[in-house]
Image (cartoon, rainbow, N blue to C red):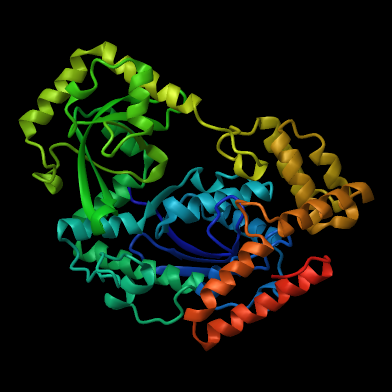
Length: 474
């Protein structure tokens, strides 16, 4: 099945924390099935007052802090508009560059913090990560892409370097819309020059149902990843699917057939757990995440013939070992369950999107109501949420957008919390004034005049903030 549209999107953000940083720019291109543009979308906003941008993010986007804070739309207004846009283009195939590892989870957390469905982009749509497709085409010698080397000699797939080397002419790297156009350029190149890879990407890897069918019916699958160790290199692993995870069916538990089963067949579940979570790689037990755009092939796919560094007859015999030993299969699934049981709950609600489970139907309905009612009624809606995460996030969203709608005591409590987070000298998962000032000191010596102006303006703002709070700046 070929999608009727592609939606290519990118973000520019306040930093790299998926749970705490937010997009300040979203660019999207909607194309037809042949990758011809239909229309584009560009959204920009100021960050919430609870979020201090990381200085490195300001340098990357070449934006002054004052320019960010002067933007007309709030984060809530922009994210709400983007959520509506997502619903309007569904069904579509979303294309990103490194989206599975960064943009997707960051945007899910941003939807979460703004009381929108965190998984709205996954419902009725498929998704494709062009970074993985470009890496695969390079590994297979298809697509004739020029791939740069970093200063230390490692293969580099950074979008702002690989796109211009392959004919992308538009300037403005690290503008969300320009970066989306760069991704479109690479997609067109691969669709024309590596049609077998592109066809599998669109019809197989972008669709978790198709990947699920392939994995479920295969004795041996080959998974492609890019191994960044030792300078970066392609990695093709032969896996034998054991079955869906008992706690989460979206993970297919597999064993790496490159590892001799004799090394662990006699272990009990608790001993097997260590093979998942600790010890040197490669680890024999791994997951194929259906939602993670896994690049997998049937074991006999001609595209990956002779790519696995283990003889086919050895792989087949090891797979038979697992098929015969149902007890071992059960122990492996038990070990995966034990490894999940050892997961430590994150401390802060902002970090609990995945660990806290899905929302109830009741809370989903109340979330929709929250966005419809007038500000004076929003706190009443928040108090009806059964999920405590939503109560916590809802109060803080009202404080950010409609503070006058909150009672004075709640406003004072949340204002004190915000100041406490900004002024903390502890190690925190968000950017504090102290860590921002330290980063500015580290970045200043190696930046150009434009970068210095950006950093010095932000430094002055942060020091003024400290003085206003009666805190001495270092």
